[in-house]
Image 1 (cartoon, rainbow, N blue to C red):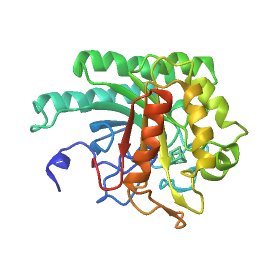
Image 2: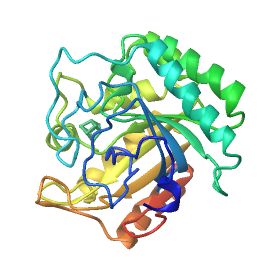
Image 3: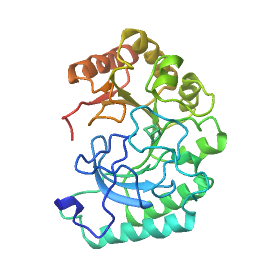
Length: 284
Ligand code: SF4
């Protein structure tokens, strides 16, 4: 067990929609409501907050690169807000009791886990709890949501997540055709509507996973319209990353760092938006 996992907190899973991957862990589903701290490529040492059913995926997308496996049973319950509060309080009190976490600082409280967090029926109440406990037990630690963005068209969802420090919205394609091939939404929705909804948030970041292979979202016919979607979304930042390990869909491959960097340069120069790159093997 490595130093950062030597805790009584549950060992972390390896959610894949956010690049928060521990290559030593091969089961991707979270079995707890609170997990980690997880060493994240993009956010540092973060505590994972899973408002989805334990050990079952529930998502509005079916990304071809997803490593969470098939959808769980529909009747599997979400954690209650009371359960979330109790477990988050316990985890934060534990971390506080251990000082600075043996030299590591907690860099984020991240709503992620087994699918699409915004599907939780009491999302607003859960975020109330998160913000209250952050103020009490983890002041200054950023609150972050990783989302496919499909529920951002609902005003009550936007009102809830707008109170977080950051909402990272997945925009993996420039065209509707590639969005449907790569992310496979379970209900009809356009990727442009996701970008338009993100623009209504004060705290949106665009997160884009780039791949080569049977689907290639790095070609000019994808990147040109994708830049237009980013312009529409008006995020405070763009994060580009690629596969950190082989996906279930064997015909997808990671994208070399120079390709990611060239796309990032276009974001910076053509849109004047900050853009970070997380290439395979870098920034881990
Ligand atoms: S958005 Fe859903 S389907 Fe896509 S990678 Fe994340 S959990 Fe998997």
